[in-house]
Image (cartoon, rainbow, N blue to C red; front, side, top):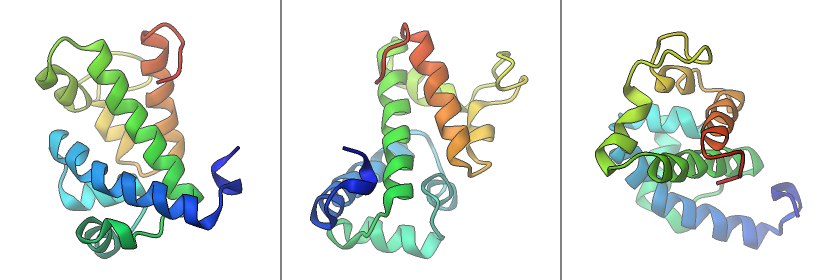
Length: 133
């Protein structure tokens, strides 16, 4: 069942769980609050409100898709790389892969587009052998 077809209660539940987890990931990645909000596709004020009260967060299908991709990126990095530090810093290191053109993957993610989250997730999935995180 796709995110769009989940009940409002189920989406609320998923959103609250995601907002209890996401601030920890954004902190591990060294993101500023404004960058964390951008990756999630919300204004800074909304992100702060959701972070303070995860149970009150109202993530729509777009936000839940972004969150799924972010969680998948985080998980894949921690599977692929030998240490927590290496996994958490990978996004900020220059990368010679043509997808990143010598820039850090985070620069691409901070374009704010869902498609950029998807590209990075697929790149990491391919590195893991093609499976989904």
